[in-house]
Amino acid sequence: QVQLVESGGGLVQAGGSLRLSCAASGSIFTFNAMGWYRQAPGKQRELVATITSGGSTDYADSVKGRFTISRDNAKNTVYLQMNSLKPEDTAVYYCNLKQLSLQNYWGQGTQVTVSS
Image (cartoon, rainbow, N blue to C red):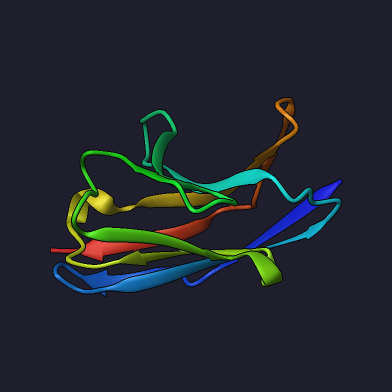
């Protein structure tokens, strides 16, 4: 089993910044992918950014150039630096870890609210 604990959400004005963190614990394998997804009210959950244990990254077009995902493999922690935030970034952000093809874990979610 794997547990994911997120932190760093909150309320920020448009144009501001926030940094999310997600610490993973439990049965974690060396090769995995961690990432962030978000879900706004009335919308489906969508990918924000992912990063593999080797450092390869992928971003949603809507956040490219504004968000940066990074990780500390020694701490099994993934970060999401969010800059130039927009009201449309308002959502619950979920941490995700995928490993061994079939294992897929989610955090409890952290609210990010961007006021205009």
